[in-house]
Image 1: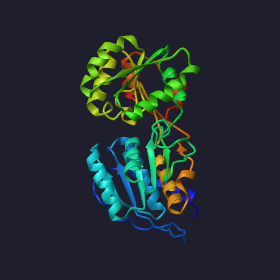
Image 2 (image 1 turned 60 degrees about the vertical axis):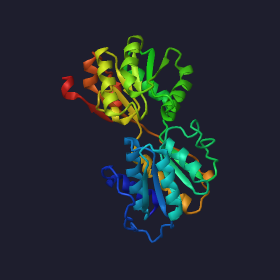
Image 3 (image 1 turned 120 degrees about the vertical axis):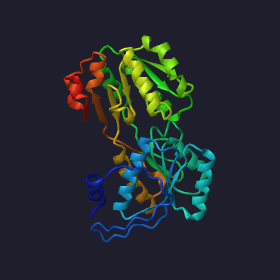
Image 4 (image 1 turned 90 degrees about the vertical axis):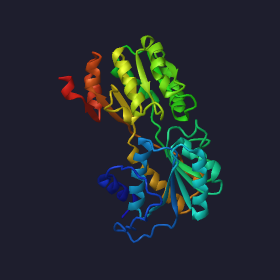
Length: 339
């Protein structure tokens, strides 16, 4: 059975992401899936800097894709944002016998490249690996490193936000200082502004999550909408709830590019399918294990996005969403509230 068909099967039967915590993981049963081809040998370790929803969804897709192809993850490293622990466990995995590391997320990829200079690395769920310095270009080119990205067209994202918010002129992005992911999103969005001269992005830097309320109080009156990007500290339940509540009180919509905001009060949320991203990463893992040079592999990007629309959030601030936006949505929440 051809690899593409196997991955298609995986997409159909994939289950829930779960909350992986057991280290190491018992090897998954080797599955031929109707093919006599033997999977290339290799001890695979997966590394997560933090257990974000995006990374865990990517991990679920990766595991499923590897299982279908006859591979197993030998070990998972969940660093919990502890750099000393991350380095210690990466070196321990190397000493135990590591053939390939899968790094999920931008910070994971950066640490892995530094700590394991002599091991192949496949990354996934890195928002923009070029801006963050993981690879020199979208064509790859970094020794030992290959992967795919959750990048999508930020110009289209801005157009979706403007479609949802009539008269959007000043869009505020809330982000933490030093967060490489939200910084990459902001840079990509700013690159799209010359084609949208009537739109301005206002950066609201929140030094600590506890400062969010004060930052919003100073700024909400001067903007038309608030954009929540992929910023780990700010999309946690408490700051997310505070952001939605303050914006609602000011009758300003929240728009987002992080999946956790969907159903949590954001007017529109535009993201990628992270399980599919993980499945696609599993095929890159196999290519590397089969002997392909990682640096020659073009960096993968998602060709589609997922749009979540919340009618209840629109009603709460007196907005009526255009029918064209609703027709494009993959999920529509708040129907009962909107009646």
